[in-house]
Image 1 (cartoon, rainbow, N blue to C red):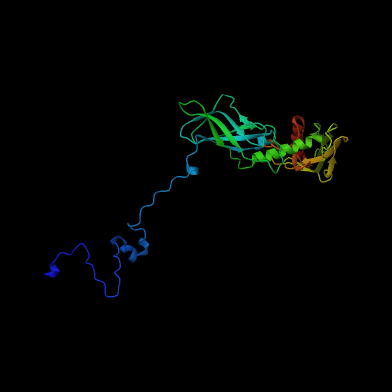
Image 2: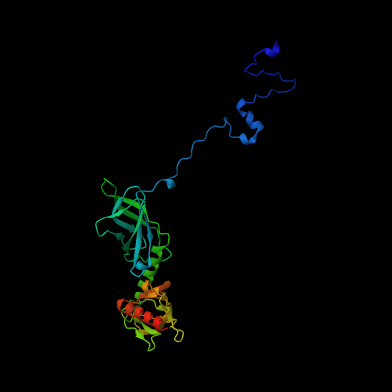
Length: 318
């Protein structure tokens, strides 16, 4: 009987009706696409190759380096080199050098003990002294930096690695700008704080003297120096009774000027002196030639000790 016959695995071809063109048969594997759009990725769609890993996603070398600066280094014209071991084994570093067009010469660090061991996946920060700044025109100065780090892994001789030296906080441009401003100002006059502190009879205020000594043999055409204002510090503030001088112009060959700055403690919490790092760096807003910014004058060891004693006693008596 026809009903009992075994069905054929090949579908029968239909004869097209008169005036109609036969359509090609739909492949069996595409039938799900006609019934459900969500099955668009059916077996008929060829497999796409997995994307290749980008170079940026590749594992870094055994050591990375990053630039930073703490308050401890700020007044010493030094920065921090943060070295990080990216491996599962200890790595020894015996020298690190950072090159930047913002400075004349490399920023170099050499461990006192011959080498520094970095534990696996651990960073260590080491201080490095800044060389003299390269004072090109501010608009043309570049802040890009690179580093050479000599490292040794277990069982291998030291090898020099060339690495990028990221500067996420703009340490190099900021230091270059401040050092170049100081260099331009020094062509006009010397700026220094007198090492004697004059404390008032009641101990609540004191006078710091800023000495401005114009250069007597400055080259012809040396611009003047404009001292716009003097700023306070985390430790010292302006005494309202005697406001600090403003808008002082200094020219080469002129007489020495001494500005008396009466100060009072800016804060009296217990940590004011104990944790101070920059409280005795007096900020001056100046213009020297084509540069304008903040120039900081350090108190020096003798005056710094007197200022710490003054703040301590003034706060105790206040």
